[in-house]
Length: 284
Image 1: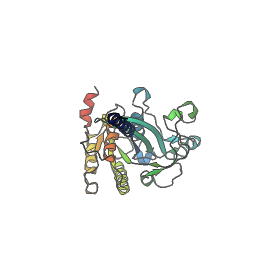
Image 2: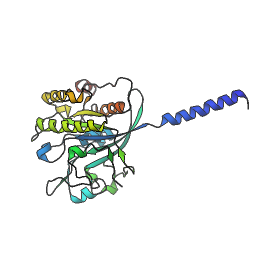
Image 3: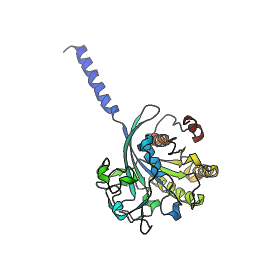
Image 4: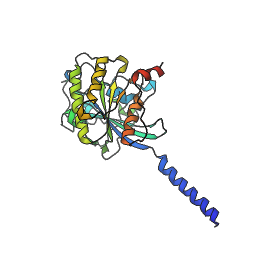
């Protein structure tokens, strides 16, 4: 074999090896957390964790559902989607950042399901209070099905069935959700107290976190200011970025997850986080 042919073959082989290394998208495991529980804790409606996950995983307007009620029957709670857990597995999706990096996101949502007969939280596999349980960094649930929508429960066989991969789901980072809309029965003080505790608990895990404000399409400006004060506290050292979203209008949803991926990946560039009022201009 001639030197030139040997050289060409070597270059070709190295290029193929390089393609194999770069073709596989970086896998990011995300836990979405925030105020959960009965109406006395969260008010008349939820804070938008499920809608945020739904929009991110299935961004098409035809696939967006806003009914993710946490009231369940015993049979639904023990079915393979919920699987006696107070968390949902939303599956995986591939997204590309502005700089061209491909990420595969696997997403779980930590919540608290209520018994529709007693209106009390179900006792799941983990018995810890939500604010402690939701920051777990190693999650496991054998044969747990991917959640798609509420109407899936009870007739799982009629929907696409994907199982949470076996072994532990090792959380790489958290999205902590804060609802900036006014909700009957929920005080801003209650949400601030809960989210502050969750953020402190996440800090103890040494995992990255992004604070995501939801329902910015009907925001209360005073709530937005309270969120900014929260991340400015000394204990958080202004190290928690805020991404302002609307799952309903699909504004900044992907940006929240990409911002978290950049922190996890120690991205050396500047992560562009566009304020909601600027992003909404692109919607119309």
